Amino acid sequence: MNGVSTNATTAAFCGHCGEPSDGGAGPTSDVHRRCGEQLAMEPPRYCAACRRRMKVQVTPLGWTAECSRHGSTEMRMRP
Ligand SMILES: [Zn+2]
Ligand SMILES: [Zn+2]
Image (cartoon, rainbow, N blue to C red; front, side):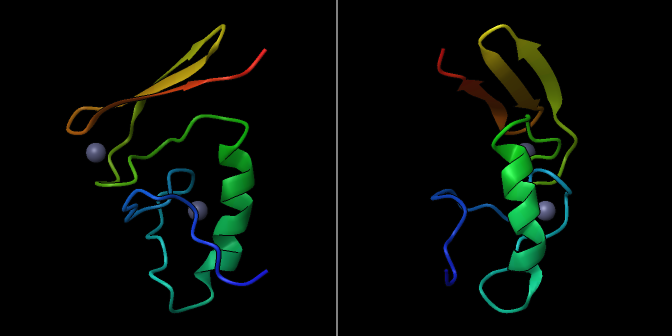
């Protein structure tokens, strides 16, 4: 497995730990691999664009994470 980008979006920060996402140089991708696994199961805590703490609401269908600047992200889990 070599250098698979996490998302198509321009994520500057990791949504799970809030650390800067690596831009392709550096070993941080290894660190954030775990974050990616976490993010697959639970909502992000930080906005990937500005690193603000997001307001997270868990719903029966999934979750909604809202950044006061960038709006909300909604995830629906499949039944
Ligand atoms: Zn991370
Ligand atoms: Zn934001």
